[in-house]
Image 1 (spheres, helix red, strand yellow):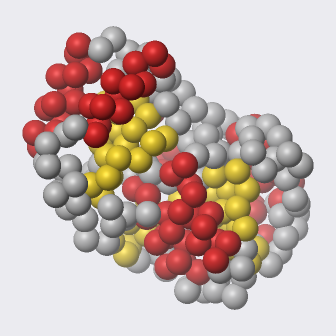
Image 2: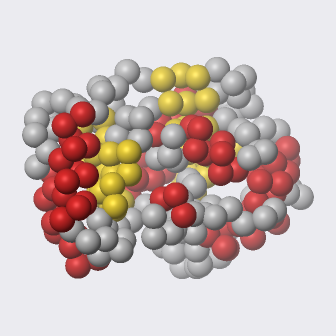
Image 3: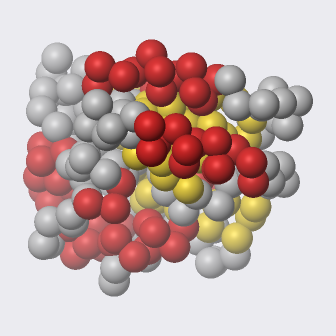
Length: 236
């Protein structure tokens, strides 16, 4: 593993949130945003002429709430919702999560100590960070939801979690849409992520002439190193 390459002024920067900019927490609602991160992101956005986006599995309102007052182009819910530079929202058509699935998962969480169910507008997540020995049970639970494939959903492994999300939603879509739009168009896309959920975004950045940086794989360290890198990038 090498160190992070310094941010260049011709980049279009795509940043994952949890596990990349923010340290992971026992539960999704327990993450903390270090002081200074929103201001550093704002400074780098200015240095890149606005070509910075946050691409996350989180809902758009949650992304904005965590990073406020910073607000930027974004790919939310794995690209199902993309906020373009002018503020317009581009939403792909995705199936609704069957209500019965939430009931099934909630019931399982009552029986398996430490299992956490996260509900999103377009997906459900089974977190087993607090009970790592139950990983196989968490996967089986996600994969055996009734009519999952027929409803158009897939199970995506994540950090100590399995997410049941629409097949049509991907971070690839967010990168592709934004790279067609100024100020991203014509720049070199660089996607920074930490998880299997980021691989689609990295693949699209690579296909468009850029590259990906995987936390703890392509460079040493974790979110703290990414945040320090962002702070240094304010002067590009």
